[in-house]
Length: 174
Image (cartoon, rainbow, N blue to C red; front, side, top):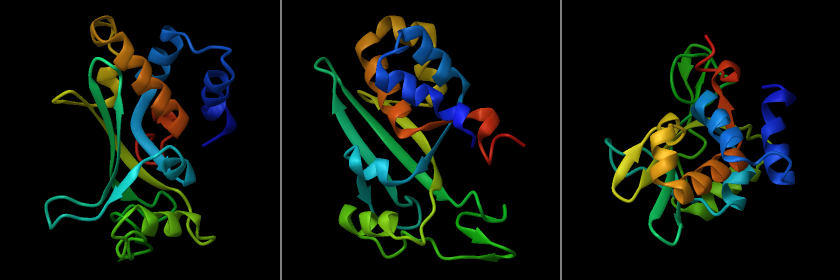
């Protein structure tokens, strides 16, 4: 992923172009993947260990907008530097998920801050109230018109996390 994909982060955080239109355009081009690195912990995401076979480990953050609650959940880690065989795959064999032994956020922080760890790709899902949404749905004009505060919180949060633009995503660009 080149520097041009991160330009939106610099523009939004510097305040140069954090208009609703710029944020919506960026989210509209995003594929929904986030590279999980130390920003996830720094932004207050909590790690939840695998809950049986049906619910894999995930990161989650809940944010109040004053009028409702928004949650961003990062699901299903994948190593983009490995072969495309499966999550955390390496060459022709399944490799170990670096978060396998993590039971809480402190454990996940140790993994992320380890020198051997490189950012893994996770899928962002959004919950507004009780509604589960894809990232692209939050950029739709009708959603923005109905939920301007929620849109702003979601967009700024995802941009700060470094949401990946589809053409630069190791999974989606093929």
